[in-house]
Amino acid sequence: MDVKERIVAELTAARDRSFGLTVEALEAPELTAQVSPLMSPLVWDLAHIGNYEEQWLLRAAAGATAVRPDIDDIYDAFEHPRAERPSLPLLSPAESRAYVTTVRDRVLDSLEKVPLIGALAGDGFVYHMVIQHEHQHDETMLATHQLRKGAPALLDPPEADPVAGGTPPAEVLVPGGPFLMGASDDPWAYDNERPGHMVDVPSFHIDTTPVGNAAYAAFIEAGGYRDPRWWHPKGWEWRSRTGKEAPAFWYREGGQWMRHRLGHVEPVPMDEPVQHVCWYEADAYARWAGRRLPTEAEWEKAASWDPAADRKRRLPWGDSGEAGAHANVGQRRHRPSPLGSYADGASAYGVRQLIGDVWEWTSTDFDGYPGFRSFPYKEYSEVFFGGEYKVLKGGSWATHPLAARPTFRNWDFPIRRQIFAGFRCARDA
Image 1 (cartoon, rainbow, N blue to C red):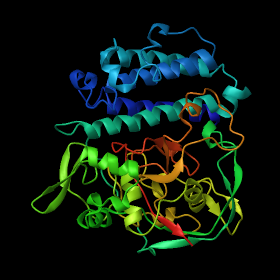
Image 2 (cartoon, rainbow, N blue to C red; image 1 turned 60 degrees about the horizontal axis):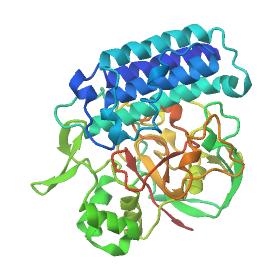
Image 3 (cartoon, helix red, strand yellow; image 1 turned 90 degrees about the vertical axis):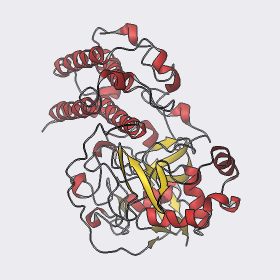
């Protein structure tokens, strides 16, 4: 399959997923409703995906005439925060579906004529950017579904048993030394992953699996939410103000922890990675456990460096291979897999579940790498640099494999819990 054939296949797969989360899953009133001020109405996400595709693949890459320039402002994510989007004159679900379909048809027609050369289209970059953007919004839409009240809109997929391989040790030592962080020649990499650069990381220990629900429940039972010793000062202020005492969507019933998951109510599976915890909760648990969150560099080295070959792997298990056989990604399951799953997906150091299951909080503030250059627009990465956001790594069960790579950098406010985020711990050697 050549580059253009793969682009067509990936564009088609992404759109099937988007429709399955919106117009094929819910009726119009639920698509236009806002379930939380943290999230957009689902119909806004759908039309925004099409408008982004129109601006980059039709206007910028193909030089084609605009389809709907009149809606650019409505679907500009930087002009309108999520809380105010329901008040905008949004396209209806039917109009949104027709619009994104028209855009897609014109993109596919134009692709035949667009040479994949130059800064914007070279190696298919702008197409890869748009494909990943749609998948990222699909994960955002899954978070909206998680916040919905009422009956499930999404059926759990038939779950293939995750591949396990015995119980790994609790932690491994990653010896100190330099490694290549980030990416320079990956055609799918965003600007914030670039340029690749050598980083010297001191020796450290890191958990072989994410922190599980049972371990986190022990933190709760030990009074972790009521003891300010474990909390960052801003985290303690957040906890005191909000009254939170457990991960989002957890509650107690008859002496048992229960959870809401995509419209289902079920006992919390104690053998799964904890998810829907914010950075402050992850940091407090790590302090209580006598450990800490890994830095982004530590996490990425544990995930991608091959010390025997003295080189970087594109994925923890190697440079290629179907992600589904090595990790829980792409909605194959609507939940994390049991701890210790996917032994074949372990990194060179023996660390498991680095890709998929849950996004993992790190201790690192989001900023540019040395030599960073904004491309192709500042609003993707650069405007978020600074101390307000924490970096998350690895992807979740909801992340598409195309965006689930060790160099990929997600970021969010340290109070955010609606995302599918968990963590693992580290300590100095």
